[in-house]
Length: 381
Image (cartoon, rainbow, N blue to C red):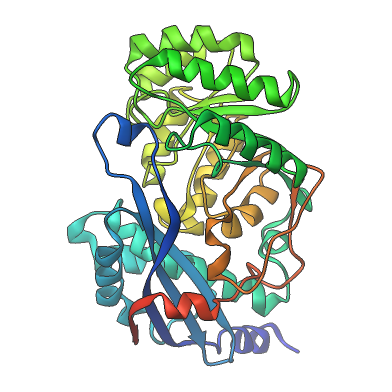
């Protein structure tokens, strides 16, 4: 077959429709981190999800999602509905060009934050569709470095739980095969933080990976002081010790403390991550594909991180981030949250401290009947 004939065949697919849905996943028990204890937020009771189901004339379909905690879900849904008509007729393989088209369709409200989080669900669906067309798991389509990723659990370490509950949850997670435990800190009384770390470290032993997350609630002096106090516990990292946008303060900590510093989950653009990396503000980057605008910008952040020699531990959304972490060159972590499991028909497998990349095409998940039941608004364009 001639080259021109191949190109003609390769360009025949087109997006025929996209279904956008807004669903709310209720948490069985409200949870609180340091932002609640400092009075900046209310306990988390539910998570909003924007689902995008993109269909092509070829019959292939891709599914993606974005999310919002406490506020923002209806805004993501509304913005996605406004820009989604620009998808119709586009070749679903031209993902970067589509991302750019969508971001300019809504550019008057910016190219980060809620605007690109609305695009994220669509972008992720397009990558899912592309991998399904290739008959490959997304990690393989991107070029996997590994078929499993070290995983740690966060959902059992919230500050709304008693220390006895946190210790019990940590022990249960280890029995299930989890490879690391992260607990929340950042309480107004830092002595309570140290007591929690002491108890959990005692339960896990000196060598088991243990991380802490202050959720941006320390100032520079407090972070430096408690960071030194925490060094004896041999932590894998301290997460978000300072405001997410304090790149200079994070850089000082990363330079002065023995314990690695991790941050990035709250950033919503490649430019913000570039600044964090350029300043050497972190030892581990923590991009979040739904928050940063989808897989397309996530891959740009990953390239910056690899070039700087940084480890990576993507935030939340393990169904997506497992594939992206598997394709990251420097041995990464992935965060385990069982909260999202009712949304999908499939489950991810954990073995010997690592989460296994599924061999199903695409991202490897499909929306469950429960996800449909939790849907409050939906529109097909």
